[in-house]
Length: 79
Image (tube, rainbow, N blue to C red; front, side, top):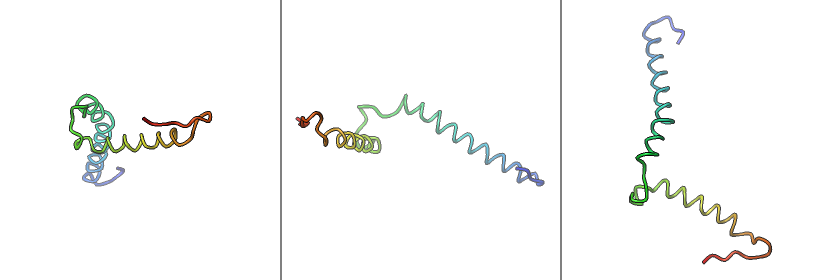
């Protein structure tokens, strides 16, 4: 923003402030509002799609780690 022309300086400040405010909103305000107003157990599954897919992938990964290797010579049997 070390410009000689006033228009470019003001436009640079405008872009910098826009990016800074959007970053603050995305990392503080939006996350806080999703924690308060976000999906819960009553929300239909088709609206929870991204988070449910991430949860399933994490569950499969944890199960593959824990379920594939027997501990102490005992085999883990799922019921």
